[in-house]
Image 1 (cartoon, rainbow, N blue to C red):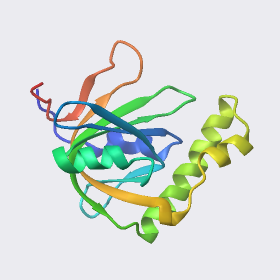
Image 2: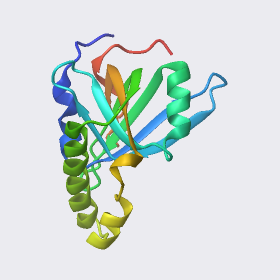
Image 3: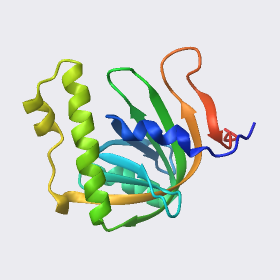
Image 4: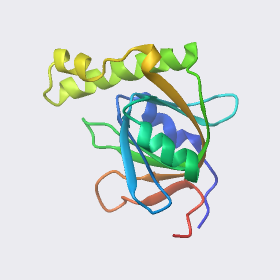
Length: 164
C-alpha cells in the first residue's frame, strides 16, 4: 500500500540519533557504515547524509553502483527508530549548512549517549571528525518505516511499499 510521503516522520533526525547507512552490491552483499548527520534539504526535499568518507567508502561505492541506500536513525534514550529508504542521487561536496547540521547532530547525539551511561569524553572522541574527512550523499526519499522495537516495527509510515 502506498502512503503519501510525509516528511514529519523525519523529525526524529533532529533529536540525538545514531545514524547507520546501508546498501548492497549487485551480488547482494551488504555494506554498512555510521553517519554523523542526516537532514532534509528544505529546497528539494531530499535527504542529505553526512559521513566520514573513508569509513563509509564501501557503502558509497555500492550505493553509487545500485542507486539504493537505506538510513536508520535510532534515539538511544527512547529506542525510537525510523528507516528511510531511497535512491542515491549523487555524492557532493560538503557545504557550510552541512557542517552546521553535523555540529547540531553531534551535540544532540552526545547528550543522548551520556543519558544512557557514556561519559562526555567518550562521546566527543567517538564523534570527532575533520571537515575534510566528510562527504555528503544526496538521497531521494522513497519510503519511511517505523523500526522502533515492538509490534509496529516495519510499518510503512510514508512513501511507497517496495515490491520485495
